[in-house]
Length: 116
Image (cartoon, rainbow, N blue to C red; front, top):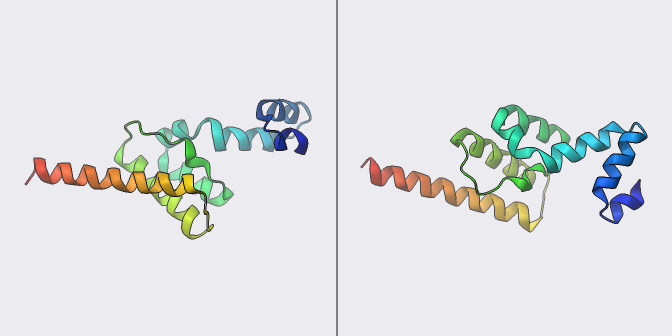
């Protein structure tokens, strides 16, 4: 299965792993890449808690769409965990974390403007 993974043939890897009964590979793929926004929307706290336990950088698909404040807080918590505890140096992780920090500041600033 390593050759499929190394050539970026993820769909084939997941299909083959499922056929061979290696369900952890398929589940890992779906949790890490396919459904993070849906999982966060269902239960942000438990999703992030499980990702921390698995030590995977799963939040890279968290987009610029509007999210509930608690969802964004949990994603920031997870990304901070990746950066500080896992020593993740991926620029995508750092950029996403910075953009979420900036959105928090924008939101806070808009509240101050609306409610002086």
